[in-house]
Every structure is written in structure tokens, then in C-alpha cells.
Image 1: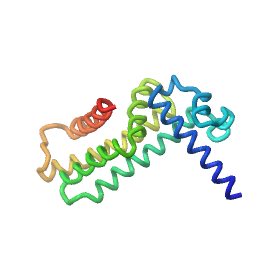
Image 2 (image 1 turned 90 degrees about the horizontal axis):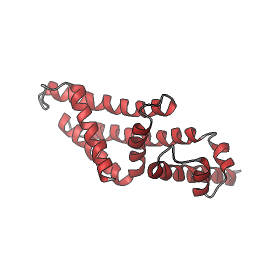
Image 3 (image 1 turned 180 degrees about the horizontal axis):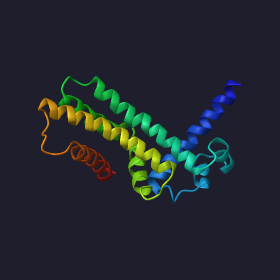
Image 4 (image 1 turned 30 degrees about the vertical axis):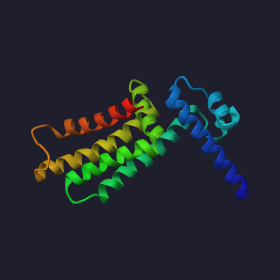
Length: 176
């Protein structure tokens, strides 16, 4: 029984890894289930068995991205020094570290935000949730930093947060 569970998990991980690399290199629309299955040395039926659809594979990958990117950023901010500057710097350092440790996952989020921005559905909602939660954290830091006098307050919080997020995504895309 344990061996079957391990084999199942290994197959799922191979499929997710193959899909991640294909979605980042070719895009979601240009990737099909046969390519994912082939890259994982499995059958198209295996993709259907474990996930049911290409969209479900992408959603699962985005859930992994949320864990790696968002949850890690929150921990970095919470563990940072007492000032809002310390916390914002910790957020940015965490983002830079992700460029090394989870490059494809971060790129997947950015690329899928671009590919799905005009398409309503589960993927756009999932991407929106991740960006929305990230924006809320940055806005809280900026608002607290403005209140303490650490950050300028002549620019609206939402605009400053958008600048931080745009610089983050733009730097990743340029580096890629």
C-alpha cells in the first residue's frame, strides 16, 4: 500500500514539474496534455486520472506558487525587524531569494497573470487571489510606514504598493 502511495505521489510530482516547465517556456495555451504527459514519461490518461484537466494542473501549480511565494513572504515580513522599512526590505529580499529558489514558480504566476488577464474563470481568480493577498500585505506595510513617518505620504498607498509589485514583476520578466 505504501509503495502505491509513493508511486502515485511521484507521478503527480513528475506531471506538475513537466507542466510547470512547459507552461513557463511555451505558455499555457501552447501546451497540451500530450506534451505534459510525454515530458513526465506518463500517458495522457494519467493526467486525466490525477487532475482531470489541463486547467486543474495549472490551478494545482498556482496553489504551490501561493505556498512558496506568498506564505514565504508573510513569514519573512513577520520575522523582520521592528520598523516598516525592515519589513518591506525583508519582503523584497524574500522576492529576490525566490528568483533563485523558485524561479519558474514566480514566472508562472507572472506569465499566467498576463495570459489570463482577459479570460474570466478559475485561473484568473486564483492568480487574482495571490496578487490580491500580496498587495494587501504591501499596502499594510506602506500604510504603517506612512503613519510612523518612515515612508512618504504624498502618494496614495495603493499606488505605492502597485509600484513595488510592478518593480518586482518587471525585474523578474527582464531577468528571464
